[in-house]
Length: 137
Length: 370
Image (tube, rainbow over all chains, first blue to last red; front, side, top):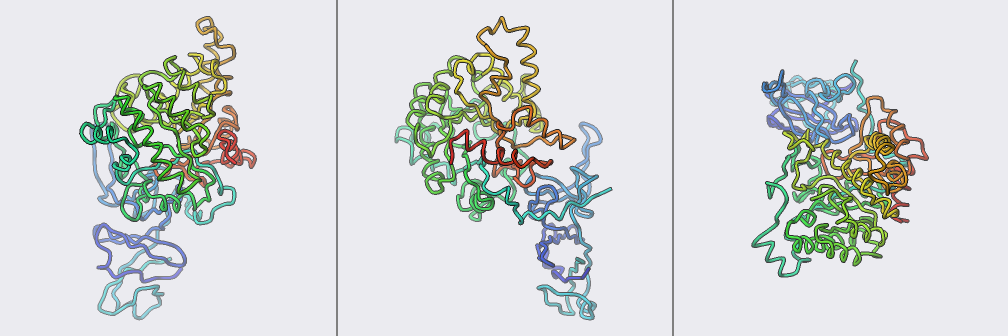
């Protein structure tokens, strides 16, 4: 496992995603409601580019005629077959018992702390004035 | 316990998935005016001033809009220039034909408006235009893509003329007829068209969808697309039963019917039911000289997408055996939201001999492809 600086915090607008390549893997780094999440850019269902999908809320209905929107913007819908995944855990809504999309730990860290290492910067140069998104792969 | 099945690498394409024949590829236009180049002036002006007359309430939208972008397109299938999925040959080559080194892709145009047009003269002109459009935009630039002869079955003489005109042109491999028509396809009024298909060596492709003017289920209009989706199976079952019971498959034994995108796991159970009833009811249909299941086995092929996923994946093998391994052909349905990927569609390992048949040899034999 190693830590990788993948973006500055203001680089990923809320509700969007930056796709980075770390250790040969494409990983989507999402900014949702002030938090950051990272998932592999490959759907465990049939291999579509998961992180190019759209973010939705979780829609629950305890009975016909009643609807509840929760988890605003935290469900990622694959662009191929519309399978949905929990952006926090990678758990599949369609097949929660057996399928997960791989997730990666994400932290936000000040450049000053990062300057002391250890970390591996892939593409993002670090300055001590900035805050950075760091993922562990 | 959660199991991550993440590490399958779609970049790595197994040899056995290369070179397949795709029995369902959807071409689209960049602009609806593309058909004008192939329409006589009389019908160009008609299209502009009057337009189409379809058999449904909504002229410019589907009755059951899909939730995915573009009313049911695969989310990453928009070409780089932003035009409609399926409208850009280089992008289709990149995402489908070249990626898998597809041997042949069979076009199933759901555009052009010919099939369901109520003004049958206009419908016939649109059919001819759509056929020319397929050649110019797809089959000529990429000979792997095979066109389908579009016809309007309510204009019998024009339909037969169109079929005869395309006979012998190997850029066309089949005739496409919408499964939802004014009447079930086995009715005698359609026999001359079906005879022309058989006589000219064209299998008949029945691709699900369309609006026949009737509710899409036997019990009326559904509320949800989720309800509409399985109703396509009802359309297909109606066709199979009609073709068998009206005696079409007895009368035209060399007619070849391909059911596209309607699923297939239901077919064995339907045959069991038909056979059982035939033993008791054959006096009503005395012209049926063999069991209904034998007519189905003789004349009907199925394509795989959207493939059924039985709870016990190995049950897929029995299902295919009941239908006949030589009657099942692989299809992707590119670029639609429920398309199947040859690497992942089957949830059970197929025997190598089956794989060869389903991915290539069955279609090659049926369509006379090399």
